[in-house]
Length: 187
Image (cartoon, rainbow, N blue to C red; front, side, top):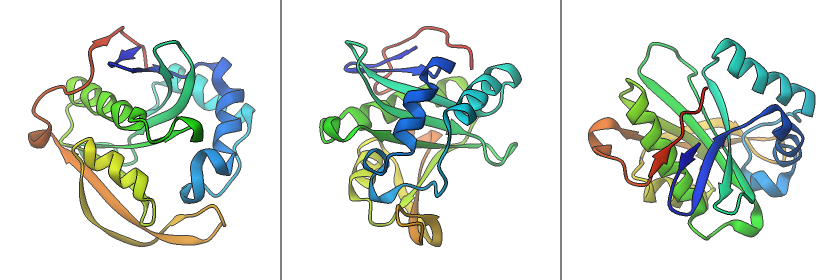
């Protein structure tokens, strides 16, 4: 469990697969800027969650919870290019809990955790160019926009869209900003 001031992140369990499938297949959850064109089933998510633990795959799903354990979102970190010294992240918050700072806090917790536990130079995120809310989340969490990726992402209409790549490098991070406590979670 990764603990912050108002939210915690915990590694998703097999029991979370139905909720994750519901969220990740719901356009309202991912918004107009979702970056996954295909539906994902509960069974596929269960398999991914089990394999994360069994094979120590570098793709880890987290459930974002308020302090009262209300599930309000999802975060992920994954290594898409092993041995290159960086990790990519993604996230989404349920619509009724947006614009309350939970997404920013969750990303700050995840960034703190990754820089404290990994020998990486950078953490990056790719998002739809039109996704102003996610840009604000990343910028508040210390990320900087690096460039435009043309026709690199899917939108909710199944069409390719332009995106931005954001990153934070270790030298910019310096020290934990939000992570208050970790219960050793086995990835």
